[in-house]
Image (cartoon, rainbow, N blue to C red; front, side, top):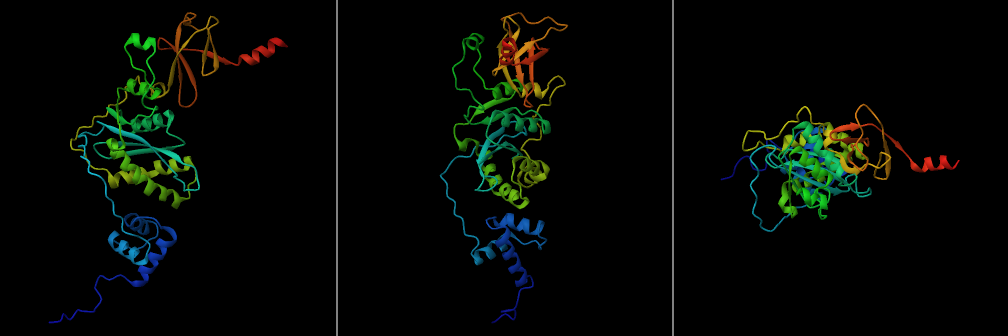
Length: 339
């Protein structure tokens, strides 16, 4: 018995001319894109009819533009994710040539919620304390204060020096500027001793290194400010809509900022400095003359807190009270005396 439809075209066949145009477009614009992302961009940006990723994959295999990827990894037991949104965030920096191999590497600071996979990222030159503070600030502005952060052992997050005598007397462990800021916010820092321990943020790095690099290429972005505008202009939202999922428990464990909490005073660089006999405070090789005001000045040889905000401004406090000051350069004063 022979079916009469044998040799006839399927009712769902695709025009060969359309197939060739899609393959040619992939070859000139989207080479290196995976079939899933390429199918999305061909429909979204080029106006081609939607095609399935499997159809496009077979076309690319036939044209020699794609090859089968076989991935094998050693067995590891999977840690169950947290149940609540905001219960644990994984933080890490991804060093990568984001603007192409001809450009220098820079660092994408990435925060990923353990329960939902919701991500928030920001591009910077390096994985610095300021970069970590800025991405955490953006997360708190959007969602609130998380309960804990899962970080690696970099000196941005954890301090490896011995405690000072003053810290020993107070029973405190030494902390980095980032660790001190997290302590003020009530965020616990948990150490990850291997990349696999924070696998969710590591896998999210792979998503950004695939999709974000190609998005930057499509938009012609070549600088960090341009890249951050793309991230904040809808790229992250689309990524979260596609890959994030609902938590196992409905309760959101993020804590909202109180009225007296100012992130500028928390996410900053804080140092304890001694007041000189001439009421001069020295910090980071800069000199500040404390000025007389309505409140009495701290006594000479006393301690004041010097806070440097992320915008570069300096604020001096004594017993939670701000002190007016005037910065000066002692070298200029010495030259004037010599004249």
